[in-house]
Image (cartoon, rainbow, N blue to C red; front, side, top):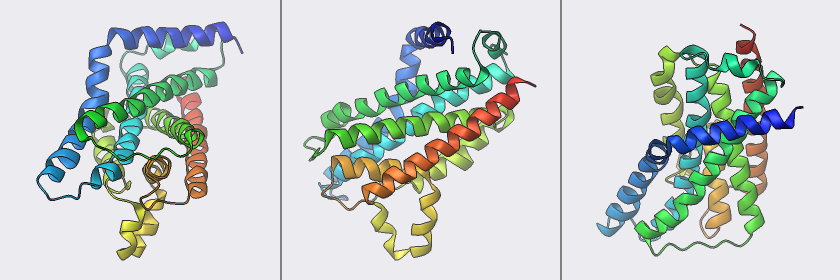
Amino acid sequence: MNWKTFLALLARDAHVARRNVVQLILQTFLQPMLFVFIFGRVMVRSGYMADSYKSLLLPGIMGISMIFTGVWAVAMPLIGEFQFTHEIEDRLLAPIQNSWLAIEKVLFGATQAVVAGLAVIPAAWLLLRPVELNLRSPLMFIAVTVLVAFLSACGGLALGCSVSQTHIGLMFSMVLTPMIFFGCAYYPWSALASFPILQKAVLVNPLVYASEGFRGALVPQFPHLPLIAVFLGLLVFDSLFLVLGLRQFRRKAVT
């Protein structure tokens, strides 16, 4: 592989991101911070939620922020470049295999997702303090963060190469919105024990493993999925979305 070309593509995407930094910050942090403020600040201070709910909520907000950021950072540019601006055609002429163009998109999207996820911690601390975090294993937290970042970026690749411009709204309403509500972001997976069929059904939702993984890494005092199940689920979905995304990207690149 031509590493100079690969790094040049990354540098170009970074330059575009710097030019649109205000828009990037708003689309990345506004929605998670609104959720944090309403559920973690308003509901707790009003007495509708227990004070400990703030610590339970934070890992889920991190998962949502990273998933949305990675999907948005990869899927939306791909939809635009393939179907509107056709800018992708210039990149396809670069001296590099088509698959590496897709991997560059994934790597850049995963980087943005990591930044978005880590930024939630100090922002939530300002809004929700005190928050009882218990980071017992930094390596475990790093591993979950990396896997969730690639999950979001690979998911964005698969969606961006599979959804047409006329179905963008449908993608958010039929795919991403159900992911949030059934992704164990606002409640632990064990809270669905009274709904055994639903509890098993939500395991097909990759956000469950992101939320439960961060919960196990940051607030292990709360119920969460076994971390081996979390890592296995994240690895399976990462691989599935990457394979599907690369196949769809190559198919679109030759048509």
